[in-house]
Image (cartoon, rainbow, N blue to C red; front, side):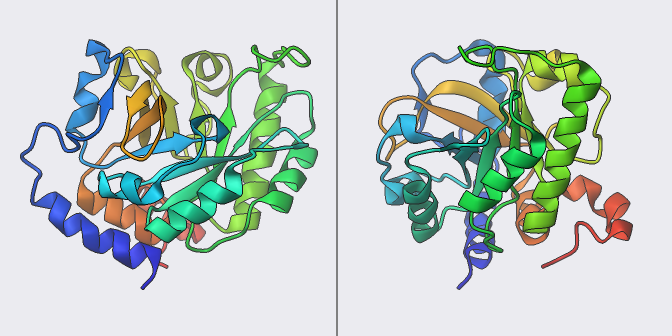
Length: 266
């Protein structure tokens, strides 16, 4: 049975619990912020993960109700997350829908970065759409640079186009408050957005940006993961999530984008 069929079937049971105020009582947060308390009201939740979480017990992650996982794959043009393949294969074996994300490094060309992504990330038709993680590299000692808006936006567009050509799926844009304000505000409305907002609801921090995924904490606790882990919520209902799984596209965009051959049932 395919990953999609299993995941969609599991949502029937979840929908029956739709009157609950906390869909995942076995999960937690060591530093909960009152500004994101409404995140727990969203029935579809997942994690994003990298080498920093160490070995993951994916069966326990799935048993805790995790509906999706985005796994760090590549960064720039020469770095692969050391645990990418273990997490990629482990999530699939446990039945957790998973996608890969690429962290953009602004000192490497868009072409180099996408060649590196394609070299290291399997083109798996059962995977979730890929994610382009766009933030400034302020933490980097070798490339703490900010590009002019138009230059950064041109790189983002080139990488999104190449990701879509490679996977056949419309990529998701992950971003934070600063990068969105500097570069993305008012741009790229035809892409689903995954927004980081750990002290307030996304609508309070991102101007005129509809979100599909919300990263609401970086200090989450999830069975099967040691220590802190990012927790995320999907905007909609179990039916919306089932639609996303079968089309690889935000259900709110189906009608508008179907004429382009996007958002069609698989």
